Image (cartoon, rainbow, N blue to C red; front, side, top):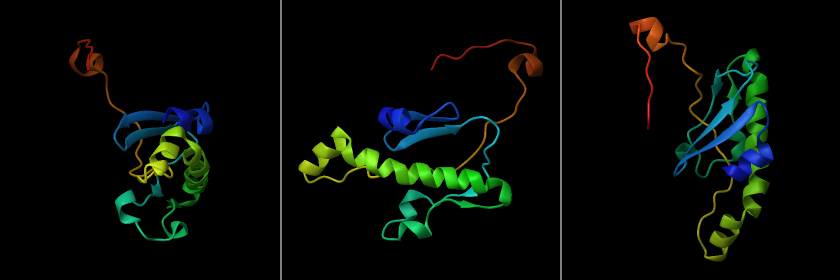
Amino acid sequence: MRTIDQELGSDHIKFYPGVSYRHLLVLKGGKFSANVECTPPHDVLGIPIDRVLVRAKDAQSKKTAQLLNKLILDSASILEQHPVNVKRKGEGKDMANMIWPWSPGKKPVMKTLQERFGIRGAVIS
């Protein structure tokens, strides 16, 4: 994910590493829409990619869908050359061949602990 973020990230696009295949893509700046239809990766095996790319649900989300699809397609050449994938290919193992954003959402709006309960808090995780 570090390489993907370095190559595809920007002030408005940030990739965060997670656990296993569960990573996070954040689109910042208020000009993006979560109103896009993404196909879960486990539902796309054997289906031509042009039939399962991100689709806009309305006119306002068209640019977001186009951006996500560009990130997906651009990630393929980056990952193909990544040292981890080169090693895996040499060992006859499957490679991570592209990013696959799905399950879009947006940052929730909620009251702070101070506003809701009159207290302050911190979390160590």
